[in-house]
Image (cartoon, rainbow, N blue to C red):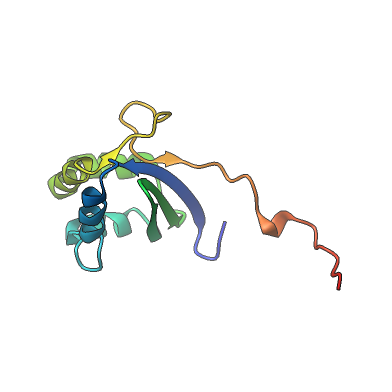
Length: 125
């Protein structure tokens, strides 16, 4: 849990093509994501979302509120033609990770370390 809610970290890959990287980033620039897609994100009680890229690897960090239900989000997205058009466009750039399940684009990452859970280190000088 964070101050905003629950943190989710998800991974996906881009097709390994620098031109695709540029186009994908352009589609995610401020104001470039279709309003219907942004509305669907907010409607699902996703309170914050960021995507980072390192080479072809994408990392999405989401903060969700108590109303977030991944299954309900999938159903709503499947019924929204604007979101489906966006997903088809993103399919031009994204590819599944080798260990992704069928029809799974973004794969959750497991947290293996938290500084908050570590004992305080003794200060040495």
